[in-house]
Image (cartoon, rainbow, N blue to C red; front, side):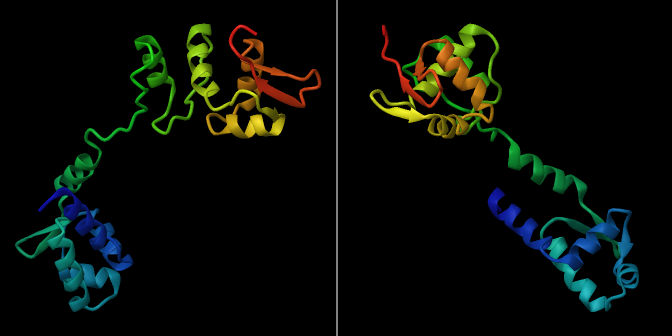
Length: 185
């Protein structure tokens, strides 16, 4: 059985409130089908049906008429779902090695900023990464700038200020309009 079908079987087994109640009882220790039926106030045939599905999925195992949770199987299934699957942002290859390292450490897998760096060089790398979303020869309102920046981080005011302070974006004195500054201007 592959990992995906194991997970599907596990989820199906726990997709019933009654089976979850059975699992809850078994989490306190092993019990017979009759003890489970009595504790839950249901017919033994219903408990047997639930136990059959829980056993088939590997959540529960039976020995000498007593049922107990297979904690090792559950842990193994959970562990296999997360092995080597931690998504990370992968910067483009055309960036410098040091810039790629900064991007990898300060960006989430979806390209949003985890934390705005305080250090000048690292902040500059992040700003250059975000700056690519602003087109030349386009006038942006402050609201439009905030909308664009919010795709990267919630602290749009700090990002906006950093762009203006470093001369990457210019703005009207009243802050109503912003535009991307060409290099050397």
